[in-house]
Length: 307
Image (cartoon, rainbow, N blue to C red; front, side, top):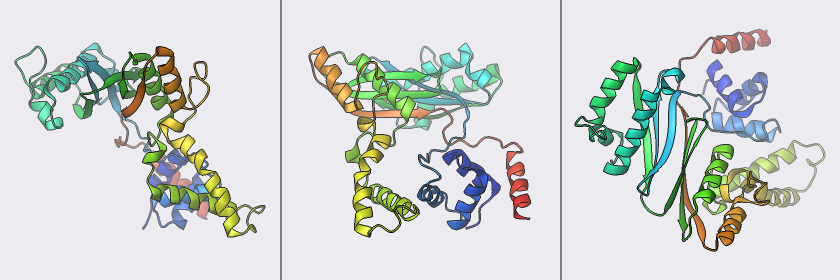
């Protein structure tokens, strides 16, 4: 599989590894992006590789709770300027209300719903907003929780929208907000280590063994010793990737993992609180934007280095 300068750029953004090392990784893995990330990790070059696409788009990721129903929604615009206007934010909030009230199955169903406090449909209002704001706007996605205790958190004016669903017999709003802030800050891949597929555990073990194979101090160790050491490092993998096993970022409130924080905070409230689920939207996550000349710059540098 061939790879392009854009692939090199993407791998560099994902791993924070130098351009030429990214090119070597893609060459060694026949252009497979996931395998290239693992190749870099095995060489010790990408110690905390992130596989999430970091290309941004404009708009807002928004979360709210309306009459007990938690809603998280992403609405995109062409420019950040438009997304920060009162008109755009009113649109987003009303769309969230339409989701809470109508429980549409998908975006197309939402578009057919009546817009709050109007006789028009969401589609008709969106068309009016496009005319008045002067930009194309799209409802990208939404989700909701209709049961349990729901807590919403919006980070930095809409770069992240997080909805946390708890099972609680006390007011767990503060707990939910702190957990939501943790999710926005650390972006865990899983909520709990019990959710990690065995295939991912096996893959991480293989990466750790490969790291030792490439370490002159460890390369001659017996295979069974390397495997035992690798198994001992799985907890570190869980702490990095699993919400409940991550170190709680608000160390001023609690020193320990997130699961411990929830239990401690619930005990102080005199009740029981259990994390059930969460949804985390990152504004523009995975949306391709118009590329600038950076790709041409990368291609030129690769060509020059190859001479």
